[in-house]
Amino acid sequence: MIIANTVKDVRDVVKEWKRNGLTVGLVPTMGALHEGHASLVTAAAAGCDRVVASVFVNPTQFGEGEDLDSYPRDFERDCGILEERGCHMVFHPSVEEMYPEGYATYVNLESEMTKQLCGKSRPGHFRGVCSVVSKLFNIVDPDRAYFGEKDAQQLAVIKRMVKDMNFDIEIVGCPTVREDDGLAKSSRNSYLNERERAAATVLYRSMERAKAMTKEGVSDASQLLEAMRDVVSSEPLARIDYIEAVDGETLMPKEKLAAGDLVAMAVYIGSTRLIDNFTVGA
Ligand code: AMP
Image 1 (cartoon, rainbow, N blue to C red):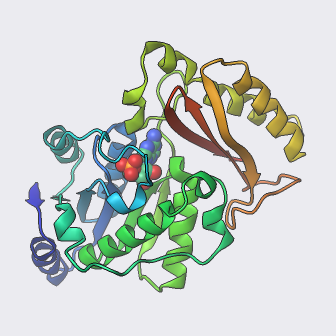
Image 2 (image 1 turned 45 degrees about the vertical axis):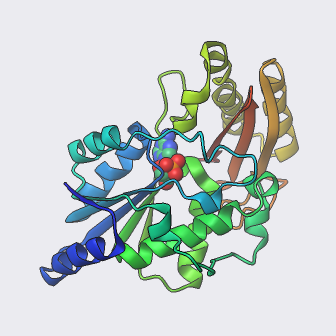
Image 3 (image 1 turned 120 degrees about the vertical axis):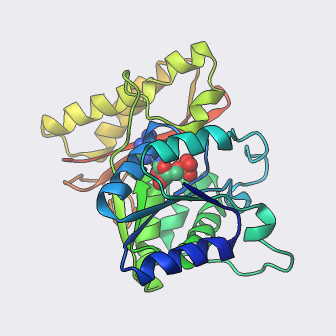
């Protein structure tokens, strides 16, 4: 596996691959890799001739007081996981390589989409995500890019951006990988102590309750959301940021749920903010 630290190194390798007619898949990550990330690499390796993963903790998507400095980093371990899953090149740039002095251009969706759900408590987050993902698209020039459904709003926002900006890239969404007890795998799970880790299953438990209700034919969003809030509120260590039901594409709130709609949540367990979601009828 090639380790590239500069834009030029990535471009030189990708150009050679493309000259040979090979297709390229991109998996953007912030490192601290787990089975969720690894599943994206596996999907990319199955769908493309060559796989590039990026490992970059992107400062522009973190807000004031968020965990930019404490975000877990273990590049050597990440490389082992990537190589084992068939990644051909890892792009591991410095902050200066991505945002050199004088950097001034950002990609921002002028849409209600980025103001819903996580956008409410993380203003500027999707501006940072769209900017760094656009840069990665321009640097790597992939045929396909792989994103997790765990970050459902991110996936919807990136699909919108790709359409709007005419990126000639297929966006592939991959299912959420979970721990045995249902907790969605996340680099931030490492912040949880033992008691918090046990409490964190409340997100999945509340979603299971809602899924069972939709199967029984309940389509009234307020009824479902209330049931989910009841489950989460029963856990003393949990504090709800939001639990909402929205259209799966536009992310605008829905009152009557139909197949394809998204039920998404963010919950603090202690001081750790966890997100999860499910698609109705999936
Ligand atoms: P991150 O490193 O958190 O920025 O995530 C990088 C990519 O991995 C994003 O596309 C995430 O949606 C995806 N991802 C993170 N956790 C999971 C998971 N549990 N299952 C599937 N994909 C995930």
